[in-house]
Each structure stands twice: as structure tokens, then as C-alpha cells.
Length: 162
Image (cartoon, helix red, strand yellow):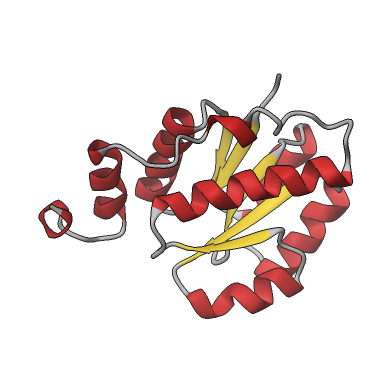
């Protein structure tokens, strides 16, 4: 079954860490990466993924407007907003995001949000089964290597987490 995820973030280190986490922990396929809003909209128009991880500060369009455009283009798309500013959560959820995860949160928080969003999407649209395998594949913790990678992306020294 398809488990297609698109990552939208302008920071290459964040995209790499997210891809690694998703592919190793959830056995998903990252079908695309976008670094700015117009590229993201073009990719979603070409083929609607199951889930999108969206950086709230993605360049090219106000985040609220981008969420509206994404919903118009692909109404069944699940969107988890990521931000280094935890105070953006209220705005993101009010604008239509399915979930919000701070970039400062541990990786387990993102994995839990992905699983919860998969359940929500199945309730909304039982015919869209692409996220069903995600619900049972999360192992609940990450490896030391993955924790170091995520720590590095956050700007922390890996030794701080040792």
C-alpha cells in the first residue's frame, strides 16, 4: 500500500533528517521535497501525497495562504506543520493544519503526530488507505544514530545528548 510523504522545508539538513527518520522508523516513501511554496504547489498539483510535513516558515507565500491553496489543490492531504517557533501552533491549527510539531520537540513527538494524523485521515476518508500501515510500524523509539542526526539538525552538539 502507498505511504507517500512530501517534505517541505527550506533547510537541507532538516529535510535530510526528516527523510532518514521517516524511512527508517515508518518505512515510508518520501516522494518529494520542496524548498519554497511554488515548487510545493507544483508537486502537489502533479500528484497528491498522503501526508505533508510543512515548515511554517517556508519561503514564497504566507503560511496561512499556502495551507488554503494546498487544501484547494488536494483536499484529502494530511498536513503536519513544523516550526521552530512553538507559538505558531495556534495559527497553524486555525489555518487548517491537521497537527503541529515544534522542531524543538523530540523525534518521537513527530512520529506520534504522524500516526495520529493517519488515524484522523482514515476517519475522514476510509477509502484512502495509504496511511494505514503507518499506524502499526512506529517502533516507539529511535536509534542513537538517529538521535544524533536530529540533534545535529537542531544545532546541538551530539555530545550534549550523550
